[in-house]
Structure formats: C-alpha cells, structure tokens
Length: 283
Length: 257
Image 1 (tube, rainbow over the protein chains, first blue to last red):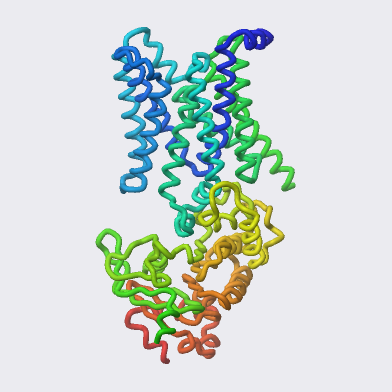
Image 2: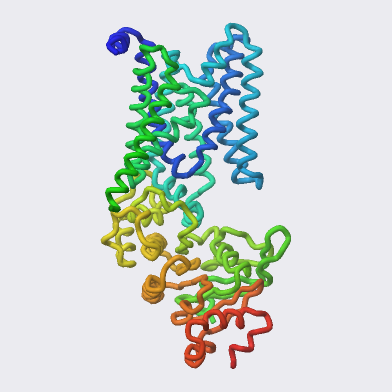
C-alpha cells in the first residue's frame, strides 16, 4: 500500500497511468451516461472492437514500414471515427438491421487487426495489451493525445448539451422542432468513438463497455437528473480507475480487470442501496 | 377569397401514401383553417397516424402535395407543436419536468446553456398547463395525465401556431382526460388544434370538424352530426357506434339521420 504511494512519487509510468485514468474518467462519465440512457451500449462495443483493426495497421506500419509517427493510439482514433461514421451512415441511410451492421463492424475490425498483428514482427505481446489494456505502458506522446481528445469530447458535449439531451429523450420530437437530428447523431457517435479510444488505453478493448456503462448505471440508480448522473458517473469512474490501479499494484494483478471489478462492485452496491431506500420509502 | 386562402393552415391535395407498395392513404384532400379544432378519427391501421406524420414532415407523400402554412412541412414544421403518445419513450429517463419543457426550445436556442429568457418561456408554458409547482420534480414520477400536460407544455414552449395531438387520452383516466380537454379548449382560443383519437366520445364536445380516416379521408362538420338525441340514446357507447358508421365507406348517410 505504501509501496504504491512511494512508487507513485518515483515512477513516471505510474503517474502517467494515474493521469490517464483520471482523464478518461471525465469523458467516460459524461458519454457513458448518454450511452446508458439511450441504450446504445452495443454501438460502443462494436466501435471498441473495431479499434483493433486501427491499432493493428498502425502498429504494422510503425514497426515494419518505419512510419514512426504512427502509434497504435492514432490508429485506434482513426478506426473508431471511421466505425462511428459507417454506423451512423448506415443508421440514417439504409434499411439494414442495426444489429447486422454492428456485428459486421465489430468482426471485420477485429479480423483486420489480427491479420496485421500476425504480420508484425517482434514479441507478439501487443494483442493481449490491446484486448485487456495496459495502462502502465502509456507514453508521454499518448498522454498528450489523450488530454486533447478528452478536452474535445468534454467541450463539444457541453456546447451541444441541450440538443443532445432533446434527441436522446425523444428523437422524433427533436426532428420536428427543427434540430438536425442526423447531424447531431453522427457527432454524438464520433464523441462515443473518441471516448472508447480513451477507455481502450485504460482497460482494453474487451472491457470498454463495462467501464462505459457500469459507473453511469450506478449513478443512474442514485440521481434523477442527467447532469447529476454525469457528474456522479465521472466521480465513480475516477474512483474505479484510481482504486483499481492502487489495488492491483502490490499483488501485481492486471490493472484493467481490477478497475472493472471495482466498478462492478460499486454497481452492485448501488442496486442494494436503491433497494433498501425503496423499502424505506414504501413501508 | 384572399382572406380565405390565407386562413388555411394545413392543406393536402391529392395525397397518396403507402408502405412497401401498399397504399395506406389514397387521394387525400384536406384543408384545415386557422383556429379550427379538428378531430381525426378512424379504425386502427386506417392511416390516422400516417396522416399526422405526413403533416409533420416525418413522411413524404408518394403523390400529391402537403403544405403547412403554405410551405412544405420540412420548412415549416417548427411552427407546429407536437404532442406524442407518452408511452413511446423511456419513462426512466433522468430529467426534471422543466428539463422536458425546455427540450421544446432546444432547436431554437443557440449552443451552450439555455438563456434566462428561454427558461422563462418554458416556465410560462408550464404555467399554461397548471404545473408550475412541479418544475423540479422528476418527470418519471408524474402520473400519466400530468406527463401528458408536461408534453403539451413542451410543445407550447416554442410558441407554435398550431398544436397536433396523437391520442392525448390514450394513457390517462377519465378525469385527467377531461382536464386535458379543458386545457385544449383554452388553447383553441389562440391556435389551431388537431387531435388524433380513437376516443370520439371525448373528442366530440369540443371539436369543430371531424376527419374520418380509413384509407380515404372524409370531413364532417360536427354541428351536422352531434344531435343531442344521439347522445341521449347511446350515452357512452356512442363513441363506438358513431366511429363505425362514419368511417365505413358506405356508412356516411347516418350523418343526416
């Protein structure tokens, strides 16, 4: 326990890990709340898995072709945005089932990633760290990009908050009242994509959906208005990432999985709390 | 003549609409004038909601023309206030009553937080449906009738020139329904109102004309139909019987009997 605190003062990688977690929590709480009330967790899941393709291609070009400016993180950003645009185009312009579109994006993205990772030399430790996250490996360049993405997401959500809420609540009414629903939905999916990329750095592709939905769901149990839900979700997410990092450090557990376990425990506790409260209100 | 055409709020001319090659509405001609209170009735699947969605610009006609305030709906639908059936969306959505009313203004206000003026407009709309005291209550905790009134306030907030209701009494009890129609009557003093309802008994007392929709559209002035003797004879059941007669293609003669 003390080991963690003394190492935190000493080691840059641990400071970066902590900062990455806190930074991602801001976008995670805000976007996660939207995703939860709109019930589109599976869109986020498809985008998350699709980022493997981007990371695989970027990693390959970086190592094999010497394009050193490309990092897995930039590849993930491109893949996630592309996935968001494809999904949003198909949603608005085609009559295909959403379910089918998401499965296609999800699976094709992963397949591309696996092929490129297999063709990339060196120790193939990458796949595991993409899938399950490696928060302790965040570089200073990554941290800079994470900060920029975080600021973009937060600023855009705050600017367009009213319209996004109106669309989330009642899309048809929003359309009639003159809001350009398709445009804002596309913007929104791009923000989800950027948030997913941030979270992939923290907990990895497979666990993104958990971190996006668990703190928001916990906050939803305890609040009645969206801004309060978002704020609480940000705090819970920060608590989970920081706490998870702390708990996993000494016993050398995987940080991403520990973070998600903590978020899960908080969620179960909130259900329990809501039950007790409900029983007290209705004797 | 000039005033008569200016008076027309909604006009449909020769409108056909269908899904997957099957016509739901055929050759619809309809004109709605300023400050009318119109009831749209008809059997399920007859095209009531489709007609409403054409007027709102959510659907485009296969043939013919829909004009709202003399313009295509895409350009003028923001002048319409729409009150949907409330069961259609997530009733656990974390918003307060005032938040919901403010959504009626989200398209018109700029980016960033709502201005004080916008919030004031929402508060006035809430007062118009007698729910000022509930502004900070969670929307999810209201009764069906109260929710319906909040949705009316949301539609009113943007100061529309016409209100359209989809089954306003579908999810509320009789007393709450009466209260809703009282509010509608007050609003009708300043704007045109269109009500889609299967419940013609409710509609009847306040409505100036009835539009029957069953693939085709027939308009009846209510004065010609709403004889007191019919009400006496049929009481509550009148709703059902009139519904059948006036919407059957061959049954329109009953209006003169």
